[in-house]
Length: 342
Image 1 (tube, rainbow, N blue to C red):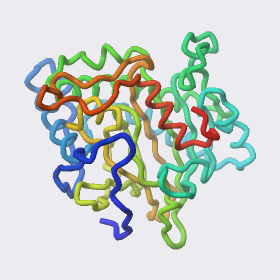
Image 2 (cartoon, one colour; image 1 turned 90 degrees about the vertical axis):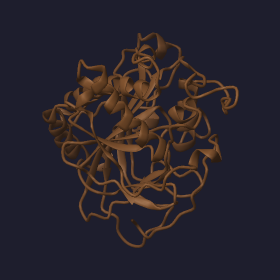
Image 3 (tube, one colour; image 1 turned 60 degrees about the vertical axis):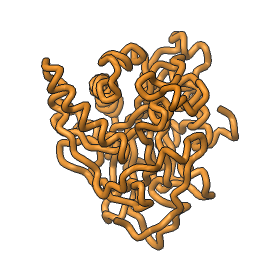
């Protein structure tokens, strides 16, 4: 556990009751292979393990996930080449020049911890579904649908990272099935809402942290994710999770595994039964750190109400209905520099 202390704050919009959970000291590793089994009993075993992780810490690893290692390797190599480019060349695709939140985020370009004045010490590229300007959602002016803002160099970046994104969408569909089973819902409950999901990929580079650690200037400050769940591939340590005792615990890379963590939308959907947990990155490895964080929501216009297996007359839903798209837009506007505009 790290010795850097920051307050364990209940973030805006979530209830304090959310945090009465076990003080887990490590992130569990779950064999995800059973979710592909034709046996419902085998799939339910995976779901039961996910249920425990989601109730107690909101983070877990999945192994035996069937994601192609060659796709990860090509994405890793392409992102290393991009972030090695001169700053002026990377700035040609700055995300503020895109009408739909796509492109390069420079060092200190966002502030994940809304309670502090500072900037996060990493660079990133924001990307999502690569849709044409004829897309009906794009024509409606919805920020998270539309064309990506691709770099010209390296030439294989678009292919390598686009392939990673598409393969992650398929993996996300299987995680949706597992989540539904974990909540005692029909296995296809979330899949029906995942036809054109709001999924975003952050392609990240964290330089080694130098000097005294200042909570206002971490690799990425303490925050929760906004959507239903996130998958993370990482090549170096640095990811830390805040457990229920207010202790930061390490979530290092495990060969062949993805980290999965819950977001605020799933936390609300489940009426606080599943927890969205604070996390941050401090790159103390002495090496460059690269990660791929893909955020998974449902379709933009889906209205989020309390799930029937998570609510009752004695335990009514604690939140107000909201569409998945509006929720994400509101949260992103607080983190990125849009001058207060959603």
